[in-house]
Image (cartoon, rainbow, N blue to C red; front, side):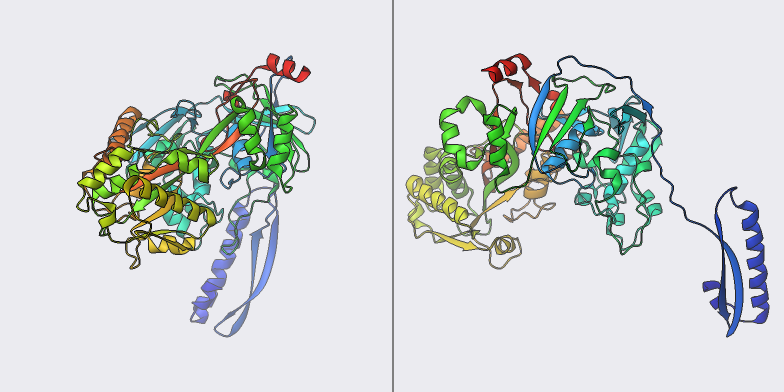
Length: 625
């Protein structure tokens, strides 16, 4: 039609028809044998003259694509060691690039291999699919070398374990491109914006499959993947360990080449348990989207060593009723499962009677008190240090948060690459130091300070939190109640009013932060750097910011750890700048049976069941009792 609109004369019309005939003849000569074809006749209006044009088009047919597989010899394990746990809800469809729920993340962690893997126990990044890696001199190109002995696995309808081809570099490329594809609508795409081309593709109004080649990831060969970054960033290694970057075989995933107005949805058959191809330390032995139990079995072809002893994972699915956590806890009380969350309704009794049998597991949500550097009061570092050192974090956690938190003296929480031990850096609660700092300030006495506007969110818990801090400042620093003026606002207004350019900025405020990846740069670079973060305190740039950038571009992990220790001290030691005062990181109680000899819960991502150790003999004895 577009060609026809451009014709101006009958001569051009004749030329067009002749060309069309030649094209039809050429198509007939070059058409693949056996390809279905359709003859289409249509009327084209050229210069007001109707012209009949006949053309041959390829007929689109659906072809079921799968992985060629071979049976794996059956391995019978006598008296397998069982890990028995609960999940909330039934078995979900699994797409690594879209998973956000705890259940999906746990399953993906154990069923799918990633380039690297984070060790919650050692707090480092370990090889997994990748054996090793290197970076270019400018830090912009990362090259990963892959194993060739990790295979795609599936369990057939009759329970036979099948092995497919090896996981290769093309699978890795496919995963990273899918993250950047806006039609997939992955919630994690922005984290990869430092990958060349990812932001451009992800923000494009219309994308086709061919456009994904713009993303800076390439399979050099089957065992080599190359990434091209926009800026150097050592956090890239940490990012490669995350669950949402686990490869998936592209031949079983439908093409995303759909009309731009449509969006990919998580409802395709390839995500269902009966169709899943997996690649991790465990295989999906049995599961159903309607069943109440799932069984994972150790992958007999997994080439990497297990540090734990679990042969099978039996998962009890608890329906999403009013109290699913209580249902899980009751199974734990009956000795039916090894691990379970502790419901708040049973907390007081359990913590009093079963102290050795629970574990407080932190996540990475850290809460802090922030200071306005343009405030008449808090532009003075001695006052910031005095207010921070006067806060008894343990008391705050126990009286306001029922003990469900761990105190923090510095900013980067445990379970983060680059985090230093919690009790080694930072001032923490130190009333004598707090009073000494106040005396050294220009005010000398809290009673001589002007009123302080303390902004918090509108919840009852936020008010209780603020009132306790107000009381601590009164007790330790002698601050009259009328000096600390607490103001509650909706959370959205709190966020807006604490931006650096807000005309309504308070003197101090409460906020929390959880990074998008478990690397120290996600805290310092994204929250405290004077330029690359929002810099809500409006802190002027200094040598600390240069060190934050240097730490983020230093590849050797031991050097990065030392750099972040230095940065934590520059911020939070007794002579530190104290732009914020870290308070606590949120945590939850996990009930753990006595027969669990090794339980290493993940602080971020999914639990790694191949690292758990179950004392099967003790388990049997306790159940007999």
